[in-house]
Image 1 (spheres, rainbow, N blue to C red):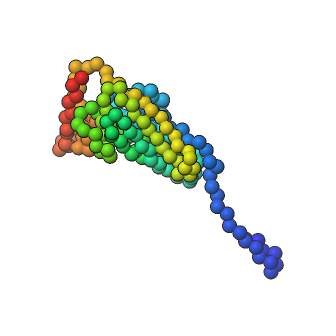
Image 2: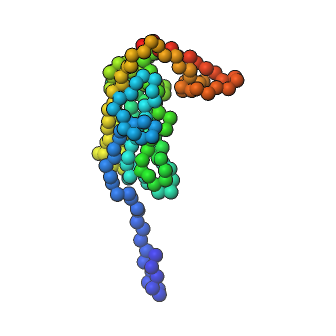
Image 3: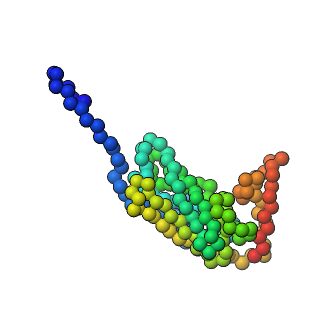
Length: 173
């Protein structure tokens, strides 16, 4: 608002981020690029998109989709900004890969077969034409068999306390 004696003038404006192209890639938990994952590993997705960082003093969240076309399984995963104003987002918990059971979209697991391809995609809500995409191959390594202990939330864990629920999962290679 500007006032000069009895003359008053005012206006409003909306501040919008400068549109930028996003980039999505499959990574380690430390954001190191990955080309392949092995069975029972955690699959991590990282997205870089500065215009999704709408509030510079807040850590924000975005969503991505990861699909295994060969099995029909898919998961939506929330990615959290690595720091205020970074524009870098990662799913810190990862998504677990498995080859037993059935494909159940949305159950927290990705059901895969040998040499299947995982496809990740993210559509920018600021610029709808900005869609980032990446693929990664799941490989099976030669092994005699693997026994993994899962906690009550079906997440691989190595630490348990008395009274915890443990769900053993056996995978025969």
